Amino acid sequence: ERTKYDLWYVENWSLWLDIKIVLRTVLQTLSRKNRNAY
Image (cartoon, rainbow, N blue to C red; front, side, top):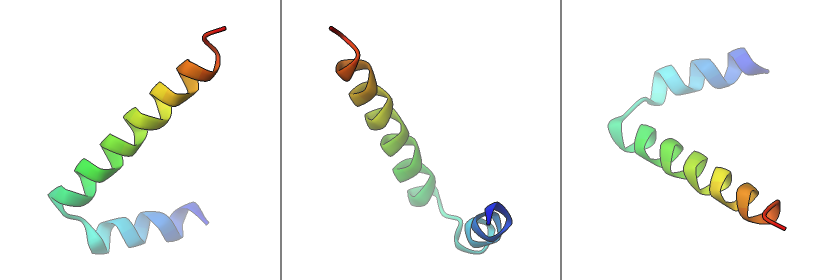
């Protein structure tokens, strides 16, 4: 399964895709921290 995603990423790589991945990662990390704040 992971290999399938890796191959898709290599075939579809772009700077915009990397920016979207980083932004989603940051947003998910922040939302998890907010849930555990109390």
